[in-house]
Length: 126
Image (tube, rainbow, N blue to C red; front, side, top):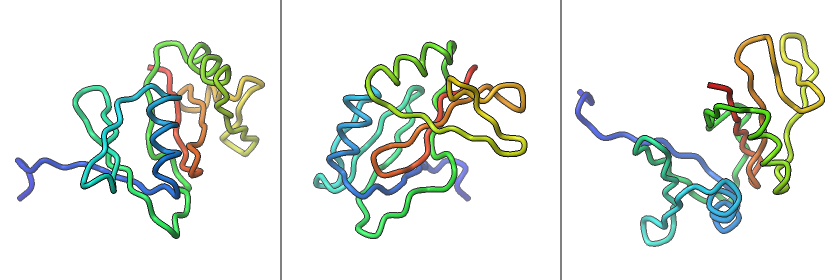
């Protein structure tokens, strides 16, 4: 039924302007205004677009909404920290991060951070 239908994903934030600044200025992604400036288009590598919309009763996702593949996770984490991005730390059974906020050994090498609305993102080693 949807084999040939264009599809896209989206997620909410509590402040569209803060999202525009974070995704555009901090992460360096192309961000466009869509639907009469009520939605942001977040343009990702490979021609994919994710829609970001403001929701007054927004609650942050409790799961990772975007994973950015990187070839050097240590450099990516260091570079993001240098511009003020704070990374999450975990010390749970099966999920531990090291002093660099990177989880290694159990699953992929990955580090998590949040956007200004509290949604969880990651950088993940290719």
